[in-house]
Length: 132
Image 1: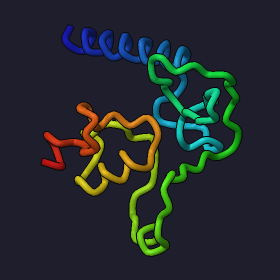
Image 2: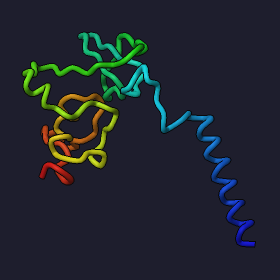
Image 3: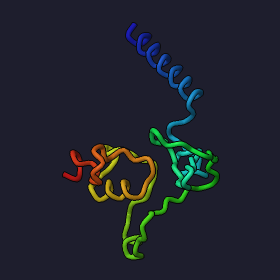
Image 4: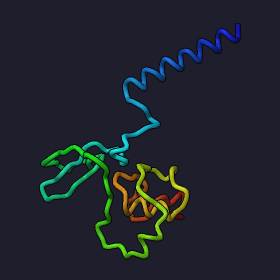
């Protein structure tokens, strides 16, 4: 009897997972042509480009699809030494729980779009987990 119940539970989980897969696609694979996971970019009236979630109150004058790979570039100049020594790269992670150090969190906050690591907007990410 216990085996029948377990089989029924696994069958139900499998069917539910299949429905999620049909609805949302694979959570474990992403399109290799766009590593960021974003499919559209918002271009504002003043020429700013926003990838991912558009902040409340921002109006997009133009929305364009992102084709090919997305390269994230800092707005301020980076010395060659700093760029070569960085072991981090933007890979879609956005939360402190996905980081492994304060240095990594700082890199993501400064360089990657759509991160959610600085709740009080003071420029210091992950103050409770890594950068305290």
